[in-house]
Length: 83
Image (cartoon, rainbow, N blue to C red; front, top):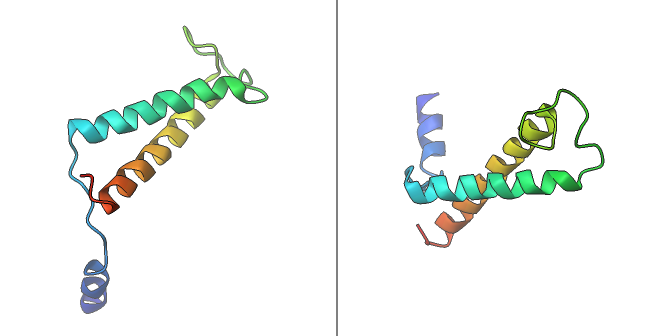
């Protein structure tokens, strides 16, 4: 089992360390996805959030999508050698 895990670990691509630049990319992609939630069909279904014109489920979904998008951007930039 250990030799199998070590053989897999040799094929895992490098991932960047956590830096303010990585955090900025994740935050920016989360904000962009939050701005895009106003375009969904039913952004106000569920409990409302104060100071934000969308509901809590739409906010959580936007943040999840923003983090997934940001991780993809960071890994893509890492693969082309930008980090």
